[in-house]
Length: 527
Image (cartoon, rainbow, N blue to C red; front, side, top):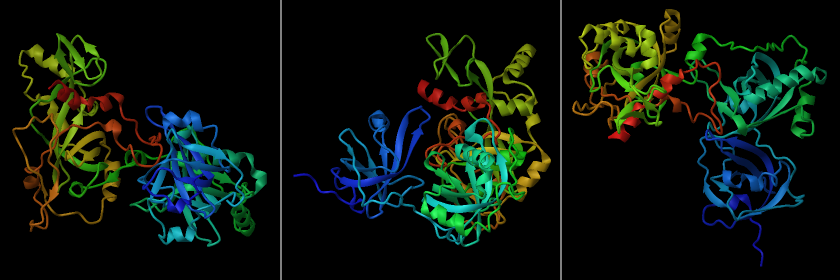
């Protein structure tokens, strides 16, 4: 006897032998950083309940030709897992994962509607009646395109515009990558179509933060854009009702300007995907965070490794002597190691002090000389001590900088990934600080006997017994213990679903600096 068809609302992890009758609403491909492709899809049944399904990499070739948006299927046998996506395409508690025994049979199911949208109105968005971790379908008319940046690499293109619906309220919308290119191409080639009404399926709503307003954006591969698609009843109705309220494509209100270069300011680039914080705010961070901080470099911290480390001649990882050869973690062989800067600097923002780890590339910019040249100069004088900090390093100190760094709670560290000395930019960043500073002390235990090149188990905690209204900077600095075991190349890796490609608007990190921060792993492996 065949198994009965069950509804999506009944699915839980009590079994794998589910059999459902569904229609494919949305289907997209995701390619990982390891260049492995998997498929993601959203399905709904006759009760209009939605669930997301994943086709793993090893099954893509089997199912890719069978699955098609708009078609209906009888499917059965899945692995059932918790819907633990950071941004969820459905509010179902579970998701389905295809396995080797999953069966997909294409059939005509007239009882399932051809389209089903999970719509949210713009008025509801403005009133905050949404979940920040849930993706929505949004329909609206474009009232103004205020900014456009279309560049050869699709993933770095951007369009900002205003969207309205029958509520006549407006919300800012930003499209990135291929969707920005899609809208731009439609605008330039379909001016006879008059106004624009678009449907964003699986869109993300971003809450206002600091100087950034409430915003609707795409979730990269997971978002689908339909423009003036009159086959969708909701789009057709809205276009008809808003025809007198929307500008035509040739209207001057469409302020479309296409460029092949970044139109963002230096400030926009520097604070991209980072939180502008004071040092007192750092103690309240709970997760890995890219920060922008304005601080003055005060003094060098003496660790166990001196002011430089022995790096690889082909990359900037550290090397160890093995079988008479200098080898790095990437197994590059070097005849001689290359000295590279790694400096721990205590910096202050006037209220608190914190330790920053500056890597080779940024140190060279601040000092004006490479670690190799500095070492050779000292050896020529016959006064070289690898643990003595050369006097020339002091040129770094007493400088106020805008610093872009990464905080990791399990290491209590701030690893520098860029800086700006410009006074005007520093002033603008200071204006972005939170109005109220946290005043509790950072209390972190210090173990002076540890090897500074190893991971510390210390994490910052807030002293509940502290009675001072403002923590004394020097006192706080005595309690801070920070290590530099951090790899900036993995920063900002999980900000939106499916893909995270940093746009051109972010100042590119030097490849040497990225790899130079991985030296800890090499040392641990050797030991």
